[in-house]
Image (cartoon, rainbow over all chains, first blue to last red; front, side, top):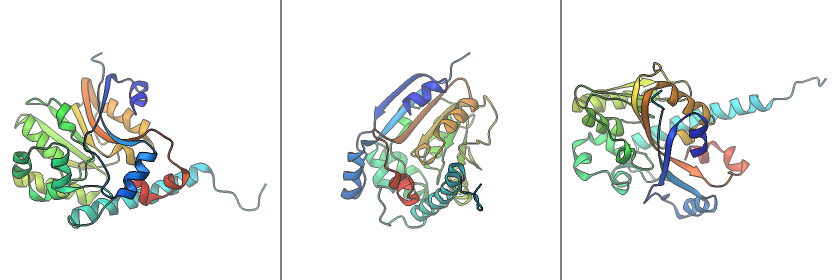
Length: 49
Length: 208
């Protein structure tokens, strides 16, 4: 997503992992961790021109 | 040439997207209609508090918007909204994030929610009206936003873009509708590894 934002022209792209995100069921959480799944907050700007 | 044409990859993707759309509509309606239901993800007030939404804001918000909350984080912590701004809430759901944004932008600002699901848009409108929030909801796809070019100061979104097969197109649309100097603050699910084909081809898992 970070790279996609930059490729689409966004500037000042920043990301931070969302603390506290996890799946309710342990089996789903285990699968998610195996794939490196996490929640992330992205911020970015459209250039002023 | 074969007697019966084989399905192209594009055809298969189109079919999968249609199935996924149905699954997503069903799943979020389930969350809205069964707030005590057992889902893969945390939802409702429990999820919102987990992501740092203040209890005061949640107490002030319509109960239905809180109970149906299915976000994956808190886009408000970096949205830096100001009075008078025009805000897009991409994937408005039952309206909690849009309603909170409307309190930040005040009566001179406005919030435009966009949601694929007509039923969720009706819920968002009803919840917003019950608080007098300056929020409308437009039915539409995030890959083809029903918004003018250069019309939005800040776009927020919470756990929605990951549901699209066409993420680049979604980001292109966000770029199109933002004013020059406009910003996004979006929380979403990302994966460090390529998901297996069995997950990609399973609408239930994708929608979760």
